[in-house]
Image: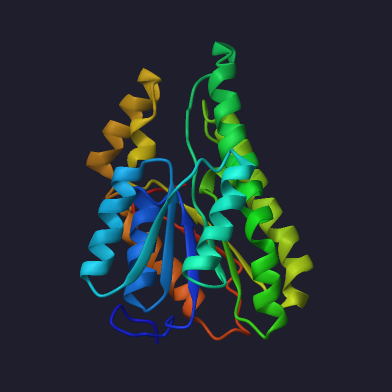
Length: 257
């Protein structure tokens, strides 16, 4: 129904945040391979341009937009540019995020603020910028999709991850509430909640104990890959418009929680 060679998304326009690497990059490729016109949004221009060229070389249509989602003016400007160059957005993948696990007693207020600013405020900036387009798509009969990337940390408890877990709990609970508000407007809202994924997010960790735990888990757990999450997102948005997979928890088979 939604394999990588189909053009099932050929009439749709998607914006993916945090698209310079990892889940965002893989999602852009996955949606483009199914015919969607994709806008890759992140801070690293060179990386974005490389990914856009790769998508175009494979026959897809893509543009790169350099923007920091914590800056609402930059996100709003990006939304206008996407509409001008690709058309009306009807898929939003809210993927940009950061993870800094540390004991709360270390009082790393710099990291607390970075996680809150990006994982919560940045997410809300994106929703605000693209909500008019999603509502317009829904009003025309849809489909329209808002995909928020949360984490199993949004529901489970992990020592040293308190602030990160709290930000992802926000994303998860926000998504549940938005479904009640936006469903009647023909907008599907989904929360994608992965376990351990091998992305640059892991490389941001600077607490030695957590780094040792993650490094040790590689020998016991076959981590998820960004492509695994991207394929799940693609499947979700390819479904008939009356079907909303509201929440997907994706775990490595050997990861207990």
